[in-house]
Image 1 (tube, rainbow, N blue to C red):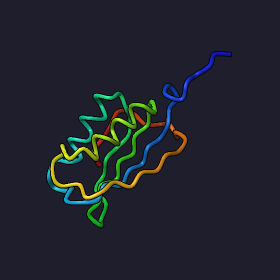
Image 2 (cartoon, rainbow, N blue to C red):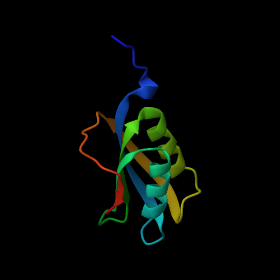
Image 3 (cartoon, helix red, strand yellow):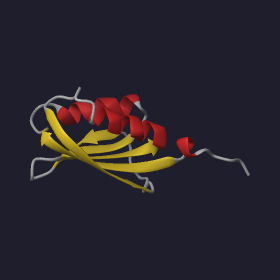
Length: 98
C-alpha cells in the first residue's frame, strides 16, 4: 500500500468572502486563480453580499487559493474570509462562476 502524504490528498475548501466582492470581477478573478492551481469548483454570489467559494483538489493548492483570497490582490475589497475544510464530494468539473 502506497503512503499518500497529506499534501497530496484531495480536500474540499468552502470559503465565505466578506466585503465589497460583488460586481467587481471577484468571481472571475477567483476562477482564474483556481484554474491556475488545478482546482475544480465554483464561486457564487450570495444574497447577503458575500461570495461563496467551493474548491476541491490537492490540500496545498486549496491552501494557496485561500491565501490568494486573503491577499488583498483581488478586485474589490475583502474584509475577511471564513473557511471550512471537509472531505471532497466529487462530481465537479472545471471551475465556474455562478
